[in-house]
Length: 102
Image 1 (cartoon, helix red, strand yellow):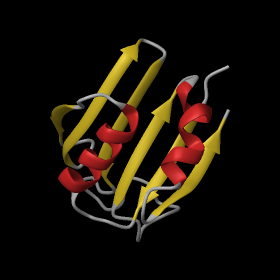
Image 2 (cartoon, helix red, strand yellow):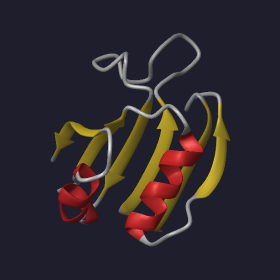
Image 3 (cartoon, rainbow, N blue to C red):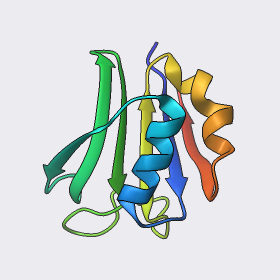
Image 4 (spheres, one colour):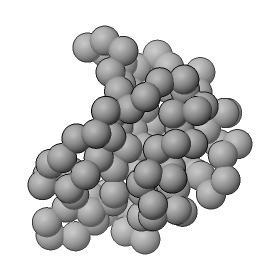
């Protein structure tokens, strides 16, 4: 069973959101760049089943998440930490759980 939660941040500044998430989770996310992921993004992988990924909600043709076109910043939390981090992430300013998925 793979758990993936998608969070939306009202703040469009990836670096500001990254700092909040890093402090909460206790890791330093690695910068990445991908046209598929809307340019710059950040991520951390504990192992092949658990990761977090922060990115802008855009790709070449529009929003990455079509169901949430006005949400500027997305955080994907995959693996067993997804449920453990849920309440702490929702306590951050301007965050909402867009899609919990099991």
